[in-house]
Image (cartoon, rainbow, N blue to C red; front, top):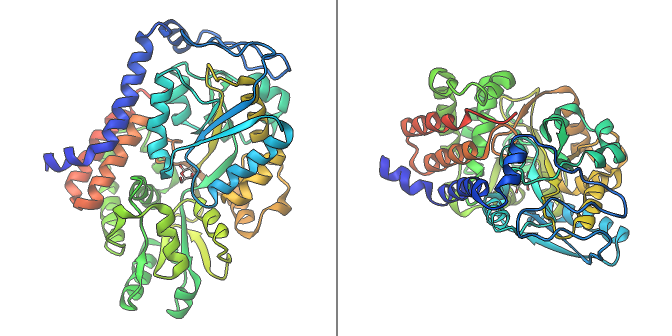
Length: 465
Ligand code: GAL
């Protein structure tokens, strides 16, 4: 059992180790004084938005952009390489290019769903004093616990003030991008984690309705299995897919309030018997899933719904962006419903971009952030991405049926933060939680999963608020 576990840790451990070393090293480097100051809350200069940018207080050895110095590049770091998400990114680039025609955009992507690979590369770059101009980061603990507390980001309050973003973004979201009264990133969207996507024809041919409850799911899955169709399409290649499925099942078993409590009251992982129920549920869901998970990305798993070789997949609504890109007609080729047992809850996450200290092209980075936060930018990005705008004042005519539904659900449902996508818990916890689920995907050892989840919960103590 112990050896399975050690093997299973593989790349996940590497990411966590890199992160730990980075945090420890940062405090010991010549720039450590600045980091310590930031951790202690000493004021950092705010990002300004005028033609004469303030030089940043960079780390030792970095040359801040000189005021007025020509900047001909902008490097944007993300993991958006799949159909749908890459289209959304391009739409933002197009607007930036209209505003700054002479600037070359370097699209620095590292493939891998949920940023599994990208985040490790980013840590190495930040550690080496080589930040991109701006990078994709989830609102919540992924931003605050990893980068802000380490003193690696510039606060951008002036930009928020100037652009009026604090008046047009929901408080729930603003709370997740601020620390000690300062804003640190610009959210471009809100995604929903707890969605079920299904093949319309397969459901019609078998006289099925999308499952509302966990029991409905088992009944539907049995019928599909009897009809020779794989009921559930699940990926595993990027190591976030099974952890993602489990967060949706935790939500189904615990409900939104107690689900959220799991990340603030770590003792629940050991003492609440609903954990056993959630593990049982996952085991049962996986018994209806394809076996070749480790070869499949989330996008490959979604493709099987379009092809009809599988009937359902449970994935965030970036899958919607994928389906649209592939020309699959919503409501005809595929349909959607909240993942079983979670109707009335919206498991949310938000992609955002921030301003790292020492950004080589800081003026352009600020211009990029302005595009990200603008109504024009969000209305171009989100319809392609499959997400809803972070702003509450979109041009609704640009959003189709699914997205209008999602906008409405976000306004009315109980909100709960995604753990896999950075909102609920710190990076070290996310890594251990993810690793436990990936080991389980192969081993199906329920006792081992529980033990690993209890151990992971130890990382939840001391989360920065
Ligand atoms: C999430 C991210 C989404 C999408 C997805 C798949 O973590 O927030 O924007 O990219 O991963 O890669």
